[in-house]
Image (cartoon, rainbow, N blue to C red; front, side, top):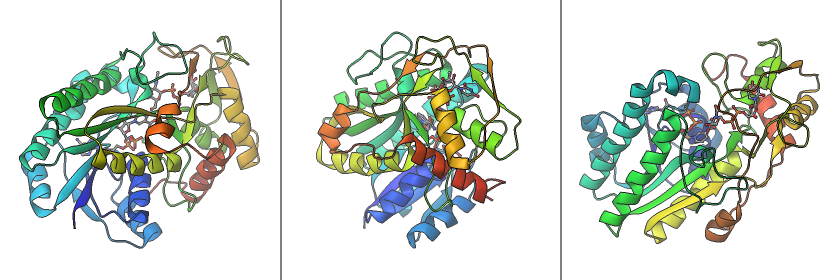
Length: 337
Ligand code: NAD
Ligand code: UD1
């Protein structure tokens, strides 16, 4: 039987998507170099689904090893999560980011071509809307970036678009995620960042668990309802379901299709804090600090296209996302081991 190759499948979004793919009857093969995840995640995916997973500890930049994976498995389509994702780190280490994300994708595409595999779902990001567009973002807006991480997403989208121009049988869905948070309801999978988290909800989770003292709220003088930044938070399981829709879509449509995965609604930092306090039943100590460089006031999706092309829309609200995040944090004080 043909299989879906999931690159970066032991990572945060990849692992939840693997659960959703297995639950929908797909067979999967995971390739991950474990640079930002643990092999124990594979057991957890198997535990939740009761299904067997084929895992390769392989770097997508390794042409020979990746070719071997395609030789040993009949790969019908790829979901491509593998990549480095920390904005600040990308500014300090641009070469590492361009090599890992762009060179890695080029190797993947070359191996796909050599094996006549022509369907790919790519993890893009709302970051491609840059600083010059205004929310709600629609897929036809011009893309741009302000840091190396963002440029890798803009460039990979361009490369994929060019592949579709060169080969009319090629099929690409570029999923532009907004802010994925939350965790699997079992508490077995969730977000497990290395070191001090950069993103809001993982940071709040560590304040709630007592690992960090207090949250810094980056600015309360934005032009928003309460002055704090507004983002479109989306439950990672809703996101995972969006990938199953995207794979089905890619098997029936050719060409390049960018699609937002967001809820279409924004929440402010203070609204997220208050939802998390409700979820964990204790106050989250916080102080207002300076704005973070590179942040914008408001970012949320126009989620119309995903509904039109996939029949998909996000279901969970912000409280549910915080409840699931807290459940995972409580059950895994030292992350996934
Ligand atoms: P993650 O770091 O948890 O998962 C990425 C996985 O890719 C990790 O398991 C890592 O070990 C693996 N990986 C990295 N480089 C690799 C390589 N060269 N070869 C093999 N494996 C490699 O991140 P995530 O949050 O699950 O994000 C998945 C994708 O979605 C990334 O491409 C990211 O840029 C994109 N994205 C994430 C967010 C977010 O907020 N989490 C938002 C928008 C887009
Ligand atoms: C960040 C990245 C973005 C990336 C996304 C998902 C930056 C500038 N942007 O987006 O490119 O696609 O993560 O990985 O890094 N906040 C606080 N205190 C904190 C952390 C965050 O107040 O300790 C605020 C931020 O100012 C923002 C909101 O919380 O208003 C969300 O921040 P974050 O979770 O980092 O996501 P983004 O900034 O949207």
